[in-house]
Image 1 (cartoon, rainbow, N blue to C red):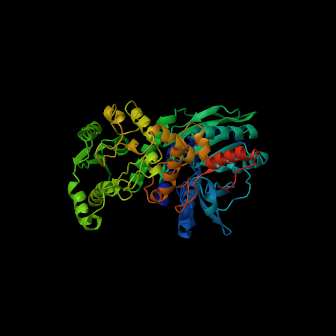
Image 2: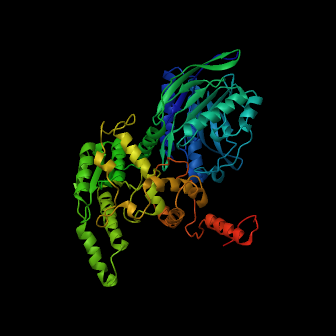
Image 3: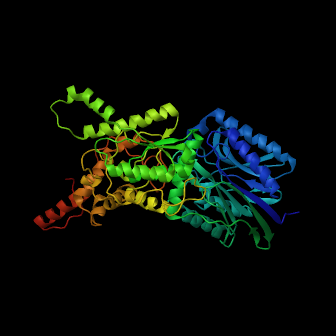
Length: 577
């Protein structure tokens, strides 16, 4: 007889890539909790046993075998008559490797394979997996469950096939990373599939950081009328019970939690904190160390580190030289005190001047220039790395996306470090998130309430303090303008002429474009950092280091118009100039 009631536990959890035994145990404990809650079925995220994304690790036969053995152990445990399980893993069958999702119930295994393999932005699944055939539903205790896997709902074919072959509801496991605006995008995609199929949909997402990706969770349920029936929180693990009832019009989610989800700048900040926390924890670092300069970038990184790990695991070091102002010393100390971290001052005059003395025979007769400025940065970087080597703490590097874009960061100096929580935040976003943190902190943050970044840091002009009276905008346009130009060049891939048409000076835009291209080699050697925008440096944007292209479109257009005036004829396009 068909079942008219169903309880599904949604296990929004944080697996670790490669820790198959740990992920297996996490699934086992979640099933036990689901049983206590009275669940019939417990659902996990995409590739849960392997961790997602495991990249080329899934190609390793030993890894595939380990995941398969873990799944078979879990399957045998379901013979106890308790909750069934839906678990993701890599699955080899008949020489093909699939992104698979397995139903485990009463000792048996039923498997479905992902059809639409994403191969854009941060995703590279066609490299690692073979596409599965269009699936039919899987039978769970008389209920026909449709299981489209993540990308399978971003186009309509898989869901259409499931609906036509008798699926009664859609259970969608996801490994969907955060970027700005992603929550609304997911809802729109899910609602489109619900509308087309007439079926309710469960969207279960992974939570946690993996290298530069942050999975925000924020799982949800839509009923067949597209009403929101369940909303789980973002950035935290939770096992939530959803209660379903089947009526004349199909299945309806009658009871489930309804939580709030961070949006906008709050979501960005929470993602940076979670990404840093998981990078440190999953790599088993005891804590972090960073240079605290008295500037905005190091201040917000220190705040994020304390929110992620607690003050007792964060070590801040001021590394002054002759150009370090008294104002910077006071601001750094005030920030460290507000955060409650260990704070040391280590002057770098001896190592800098030692380098200069050693190089003097080669440099004799040449003017001082950026070379000597970079020696200061590299002395700081080497000092922080020495502290890391001696005590085991990971160096947090603190460059923002604006500076990294144009190369205003010293390789083997302030770019040293294991992870950068603000790598994908432009300078003005750093200011906004710093002001935000002074009036709010994310749920679960371990740092203090209230103002943790002194007001003077928010209001003074930014400077690297590598020479007397230096200011960043001595050689860069104002950050308000620079950030807009960079977004146009990076996220939007605009022509130079498109950006100039917005009111920006042609020579300034050309300079920024040139700096962006020639700094590519530095970015290839930089630490990973949290992805926040649609196009971060790394997986999203893969540009050649050797690259002579410069956008001359506007110049060609202007010369074309001059030629038109000279010969008095209309022209259909631009010649090479």
